[in-house]
Image (cartoon, rainbow, N blue to C red; front, side):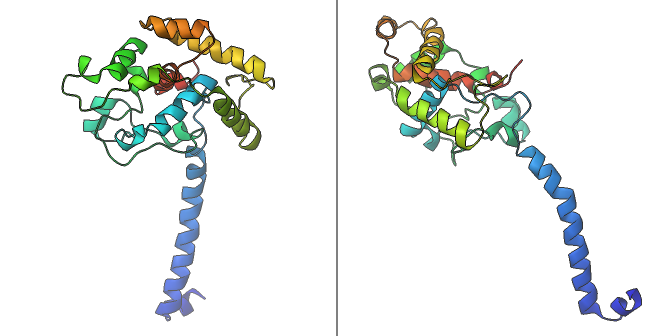
Length: 228
């Protein structure tokens, strides 16, 4: 049979391509499947972080900031470890972005604090004098959307098997009132590190402003997504 193939270049080429393709799939597919799974210890976004991610999307932050660090020295020196596929396992939709008017934010939680974000969003030039980013003062007045964040988290748990309510996950509870308590506790931890008295007074009344949720989301970008 092999001698016959050698005498028929066309069929030899076809047979070679078939064997080569099968070998390639055997080599590539297992690793591709593994790399697309969540990293070990990766946590889903909490309710407050989910609400903050919705603010990030609604404000179009992805138009100026990417969340994808490429494996080049110039990028890893500035932004930290290159992004890994499994880090995006719970991201729906992905927020990779397509340009950088501002810096990449995929590891911003590892280098910035709640206090820094509070100042930056209120007056960008106060912390980055050359910044061209507009101020986002309206985020300090508008309440975050808890109901939509809860619905998104609950749907991901039921439809996509995102591991809420499991060891290493972020409990949201089957009871929306219990989930609201968790949400407010998360908010309190952020507000405790903020300077704005108005934000603190709003939380005392049970109001979580969008800036609080957005900061929680930004703080989660980086090693905070991994369990210790």
